Image (cartoon, rainbow, N blue to C red):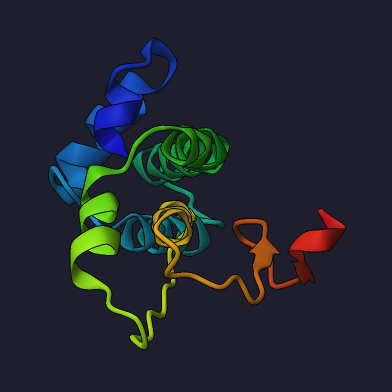
Length: 137
């Protein structure tokens, strides 16, 4: 996702900053969790440097929340070669595949080759505990 962000002027600075702090290919859930921790721990900060760090974390988190849906839409509409190969070559009739993906690219490819039956999906907004069925979105 950081590579995708880096190709867009609006998000390039945030992508670069996240890379500097978390490395080139961090787990995005770990990044969001760490940013939430920084935001919470510095909520009542008195020192200017701590308040600045909190402001940066709030900005990074808000840009991630903004960019995630855009990134997943792009993943959804574009080819997913690794998922295509997995669906075509590895999954066999009778196999059970459990996914916890944010995107549904794997499910799309499994359905395309006739190896997937859609059962149920849950949608949630980042940072909330309220969940609702996809049919309500």
